[in-house]
Image (cartoon, rainbow, N blue to C red):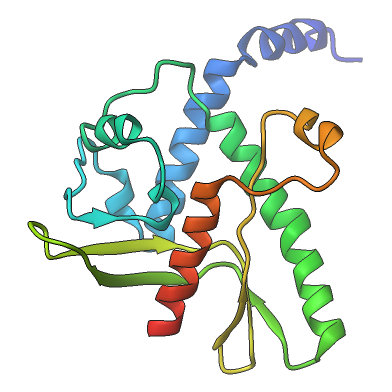
Length: 188
């Protein structure tokens, strides 16, 4: 028997805390961004171009957009846990479900984890046009990778909304987001 086991267990328990996880998660995302060719996500102090937009930002509160443009920190604690759960849900539940579902409809259907959109939309003066850039959630594609159906996966803090309304409607800005993705994919 290992006499130091209780002490080692206590050391592990003393050091296993949310701060340790947050540090690990930040480093993991940093490495992942580099491995996936997205090292530009690791830069600090990024302030987006006011004429460049993302589908996920359409139809949202102007104040929220203003703070986002200033790269202002959120007033609540870090949502990394929510995003982590959302990513796991998408990768471990949504992707396998969509893959099985798409193949059951036609064995030439596949699911691509995400697709990139980058397009311009003409708007009234003084701007002239705005650029929309972003990455979709999973997309059902054909064997050549052409998009068939784009999805948008959202996780909520609570399921109370579903208990009150058995047929809930997506938020208007979520509808705008998926419409922008559909438009962008139709242009590529």
